[in-house]
Structure formats: C-alpha cells, structure tokens
Length: 267
Image 1 (cartoon, rainbow, N blue to C red):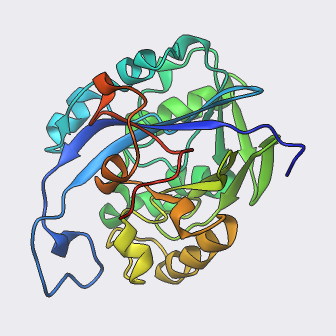
Image 2 (cartoon, rainbow, N blue to C red; image 1 turned 180 degrees about the vertical axis):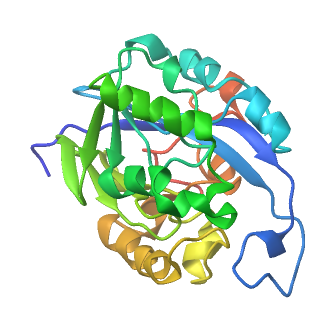
C-alpha cells in the first residue's frame, strides 16, 4: 500500500445512554449489569479532503427518545477545525435516527448510501413498528428530498469512493447497513457503525437485539475481520471503550474526541 496516502480518523462523541447489558445482546445477558452506549459521528481527514461518517441525531429527537444529548455534532467537528458547511462527502452507514439526522448541517455535501438501505427506509418494511421504530420519518423524507436535488450517491455492495477509502454493504442490523474501511498509518481501519455496537457483540458472536437479518449480522462479524488489518483495527459504533482505548488529539478534547489512526492502548 505504499502508493496510498494515510488518513487520520476521529470519533466525536455527542450523546450517551445509560442501560444494562441485557439490552445490548440478542437473548439478553445472564450477567446483567451496567453497559451504557455512546453516540458518535466520525471524521476522516486526508489527502483528498474530509469525509464524515454519519450525522447523528438532533437534540429534540434525543430528548423524545430519552437519550442524553451532550453537544451538537457540528461543534465537535468545528473543534477539530472541520467546517460542516464545507464538507463535500458524507457517508450514511444506515438511516436509523442516530445516524441519519442533521443532513442540513452539510449544505454542500453529497450523501453516500446503499441502494438496499434507501429501499428499506422507504418501502414496505416501514409498515411494521418493530422495524420502523428506529427511524425518524422526517430524516427519511429529508434524504428523499436530497435525492431529488441530485445530492445522493447510491452504492450497490462494495465500492471505492476515494483512494484508500472503501464502503462495504454488511446488512444485518438494517437491510443496507454499510461500513467504511480507511487506510491509515497503522493499516486498514474499519469503522463498523452498527455492524458491531460493542466490542463484545463481535468478540463473543452475540448480536445486538435491534436486527433485521440475524444471519447477515453474524456473517458481518467475519467480514469486519477480513476487511481490517487486525481485530484492533475494528471500531465498534457505540462502545464507550473507544474513548478509553484511543487518545484524544488534545487535552481539551479528552472524553469528547478520540483519534483512531493511532494504535490503541489495550493493556
């Protein structure tokens, strides 16, 4: 990979939810105890520009759903010197409320989404409360509006969107969930989003209970390992351990931002 220039990757924490482990595994957890979720957006900066993975939820949506809204995702990006109004590429891993809100934060961006995910979010599956409860209709309609503006780029499976950045359809959690693989100075890092909410989901082969296709989710764990340079190169989508294992880019961003292209502290 000597011909690829490496990217820097940042996890920006914007929300939090206290809950127990039994809510994070299909079938519950016999050793139940606290296992909170963090909510992130992800910034990738490098030789051909800045890419954002996921856009988070809005404060009113978080309040209605009982989630703690820590800061506007735009503020976290700005603290890294990233101006959302100038970003040209935003990848939406899937259209759940905590990943596909705030599209208007990026007025110049094209949005990358899988064909399957858009079909899922706008089709017959949304007739069922068990499937639509994690979507915000306003966010889906906003994405449809961006389609008509010519600002959505659809993907069907795996695709390179820039040198050193590839998207890969996993499915499982939703019909068209995609993950992002990024070349860094430590190798291929995979931003798993909700293909693995926590390290334990993947390490123990125990799916998260919000799932469209359980078999695809289980197969997805193997795909994550295949795409990444090592297990330490896979970043789960909601694990507070991300901020514990990876350093902040500066002291004032401790507990808010973690830099993921640097090797983790897993001692």
